[in-house]
Picture: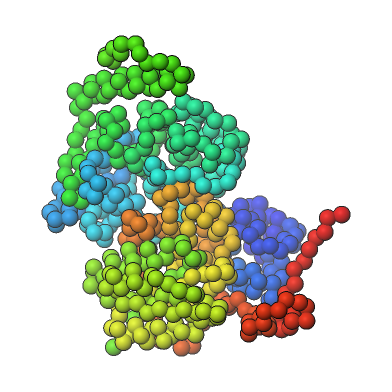
Length: 329
Length: 234
């Protein structure tokens, strides 16, 4: 490590480059790491807020991270039941596979968040519910549990917003480069095009992320989670219906082989899942498989929804809605 | 009576340290651990009331006109002795990193840094030893920013500290508190602090302003003084 020039080192290890770039001191490409540290002197190091061994240890660990191959793809998540808030056994063994949509229903406070938290932290009988989570049909290897590159769950909810002061193109490209994808700008372009296909009102890459409408924001979040997030599980919490094509959004996540969990009572979403979990008193009380009759009802509901969308569009265009409305068949 | 195990929790003001600690200590107390808090602040705090309401023993130290971290390090032993008198199993010290250069973490004592996802994705680059040398990084307020920003933020935290596990914890709902508790349970026996070392030196300056000078002007610049460099445009 000490032999390579800083230029070569930071090219080979992008994380090391990004870390060293946070130090506000000149960093000539042609000298080695040791020589550079020698040249800084004690006082400058004190100003930087790290000792020489601490910097070397950081660099070594970041090199390791850059060398590491990505984690094994997650093909299935299994929930082994624990107990509910009343201490009753939760007789559940549920496996959710990549590309599957499972919905979660139950009143506020019933334990939906706890279930999602159990999945997120790969519970091993050590959370209040006593549940255990298997990945690809086996317990996760020790040490992988809290590894940051292993964040299992990407979360999307109504309360989330973009807060960063960047344009859509700048921010998505930044996310792409953190994910170390080869052509960040091309990937960003694809994410933005996909988001625009999900929303009625398209937006330009040059608009600031904080200026997007609610629908545009959700659309960009979903496209980004599908195409750029490392997390194999996508959790959607009560997403609003305005402005996002929910069917296309779910199709996109499924096509990217995500495991999709949706906490919702929106019939269009809840009936789209293959199964839905009924949560009661902190436990999974029932697993309902969406029946053929429910699927048929979903089609009817989608027609109603399309009819409402149509009226919304007409209102947007300034039309009057005084014609006799036909029930949507 | 054995000394309590110590955990240092540090983070900039208003990131949500108290909320996270409350959530985590609730879990540990439910397991039968006797837990307490030493709360450090500068001018005033009302967080002691929040702890007291949960029945968590708390002692408060206000640094007033002193550098909060210097105040911390000169009082932390006494805090541990207080915790011992209260019969605590675990003592959490909570201190605000006011200048981002603060470093309350001690060798051999579990060190937690709390950072705020709302503070902006570049914030992790701006925090010094408090973040870089922590054993566990807790990110708060992740529930109100986008997943994409959380991922960029966590990546930047990782660059600043490749040693520590990173946990997202929602101080309001408690999501993530189980993971934080998992790490706190692993805190080693602290024993005494006498002779232990800080992980990094504290920010220091010995100059007339440290001892009350208020007048501005070069004649007052004595002692440890550092001057800015400027680049003028032509």
